[in-house]
Image (tube, rainbow, N blue to C red; front, side):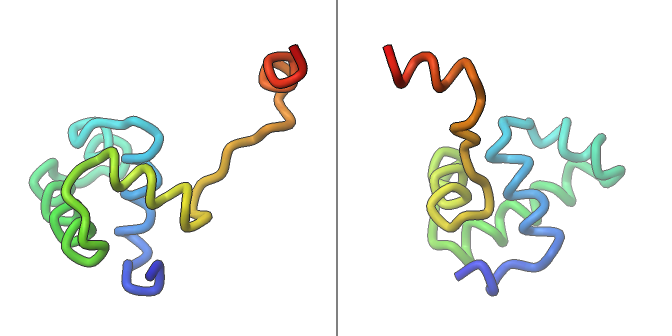
Length: 80
């Protein structure tokens, strides 16, 4: 399903999954906030999702983002 997203949509999906607001994404990418909203609307439509939580879940499930389990803090939690 990732092939359905453009490079820019994938970039925005990553930023959403990292917790950035629309305003922060717009500032980071040097685009209008309304443009970010349009991209998000298309992402939701292409992926048949309704919200940022589902977008974040999709980003991890599809392998766009991953959790780095090698971080020492996480290793300590997992082994305690």
